[in-house]
Length: 75
Length: 389
Image (cartoon, rainbow over the protein chains, first blue to last red):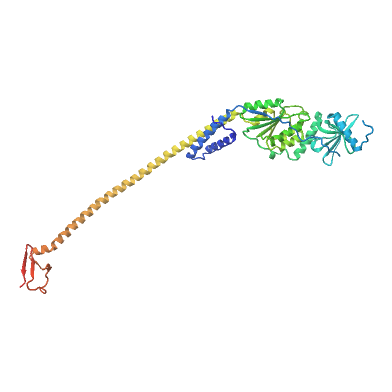
């Protein structure tokens, strides 16, 4: 399966645009065939990406603190 | 202590202050706030009291996580010190925790009105959540049930994520500093697509950090969208108002962050079907168009065929006309030819005329004919040569 890393959103949005064009009938046949193939390819790629089930967990080792409280300020 | 040693006042105050700070260290004192005031816009003074005693507390405005008011019951954590200049004994505040629902409620509404007045809750500041985030930051306690709940829900729904946990205390004295620090760190040093700030349910006291001004401001200032998933459905904290989205529970936060893969698979199937149907429709339409075009072309051809047939018929007519003209022309030519023939000299000779030539030239008069010239006479049949005498 082709794997889409990093551009799931981009592919999904491209596919949405193609589908919208088809729905509105804003295509001529030559263009339609090219876009149709592109659309199916995107669907396949996105489906492949959805087969990924693992999530990676990174635990930051850093100790978080805001600025120190208790400076030497007096009246 | 060395009795011989004479101290300056400054030295004495410093010595006592250090002695108290190092000897006792940080302490937490509970009491009721009284005489709360802010001097020079940044120095905060108030007293803690119980039935029999009072103690001065000192802090700075930017360190105050909670708004305070006289009459509130609080736990103040700090170190005992004395002011260098006046020798006044006080507790240098490190953290203030409100005690009891009443104080917390009061502080909550005071701060809520303040932040709302500044416009921090307005919709126009909300950053929209990414549709398909790939890097998710979670700010919570690693031991909290909320954390494992969120991880489980994320794993159920979506894959290929990089989830970064910024471990913080979600209650207690360190919570405010750690949460604000983590928000800042994820914004500046470890960019993610979206942040979930979460903890499980608890009393208003437990949720105090999420009602604190520094945390509310840090969430507001975040350039990365933040989803607040604090407590249960009924728990409302200030963070909920300033966050870009509010989840009713920690698991709900996970649901808001990523779609379920099932929905997207269905969505993709629908899109695929739409493409196929639209293309089929388009092809049918074209086929229909073509057959319409063919039939109209055929009609046009038939029409022209009729025209051509008409032309052919007219052409044939013309041909016979031409043949007729030719015939007449030929007759005329024969007639003329006959007439020409009658006028020919040979025909004249037959009628008894002759032609006389001298040296090949026809003789039309006697002048110029010399004696001894040979005259050649052509008759209808034969020639006679004679000599002039």
